[in-house]
Amino acid sequence: MCLIAIAHNASKFPLVIAANRDELYARPTRPAHAWEDDPRIIGGRDLRAGGSWLAARAGGRFAAVTNVRGVGREDGEGGPSRGLLVAHFVRGEVSPMAYAQSIRGSDYAGFHLIAGDRGEVVHCSNAGVLGNIDGLFAISNAPPGTHWPKVDLARDFLEDAISRHETADALADDLLQFLSTSRGGPIEREVFVALPQYGTRSSTVIVGNLFVEQNYGPGGLREGVKRQLTLT
Image 1 (tube, one colour):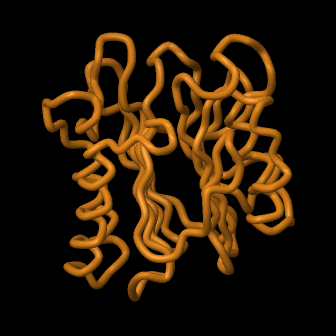
Image 2 (cartoon, helix red, strand yellow):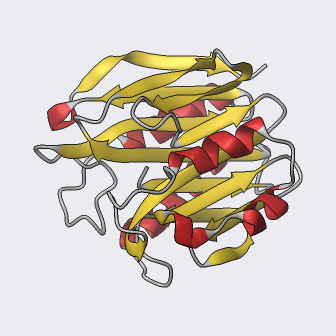
């Protein structure tokens, strides 16, 4: 996933997440669903390594990861999948901070991980814990300390959308539209990516217990209908 915007304790909605996962179209993926091994969890699954890019559990526990090039292990060098960071957290019970502090960043290819529950949300990377998140926050797959304009676009749109909508359904629809709109600029500004072999595979919005996802295939074409699930 290459763009995550979060509003935590920032509005009438205690938690809002809007995220795009960018990946090779050829990588086998299962869209968002209730996991058979733990039906409390909803999220997509990477069918190659078994992890997830974004998953949430009833009760408010969630995690999301982006890749980061040029940091940590090189892709293909072996080591655990970054998606397992998400899967292990949402299945577990340790606090977000304790989990983040337990990660050996050198074991993984470059990543940003957001892990949270109703009490706290933590941002970490291969370099360790980067801080708590309270309020509005966004991250992409740029290395720590590198600023990409699409992060500002996502954070500002999230703030504006929250102010304009009173219901979770309306907010989710607006955020999905934002996530699926191409700007036609360089990757640093592009929210929705559609390259020949690589692009945005899914747009996901979580508002409270509402989990909404739209999937895409080559060329940015929609795959299937919008999936709307409930965390219970």
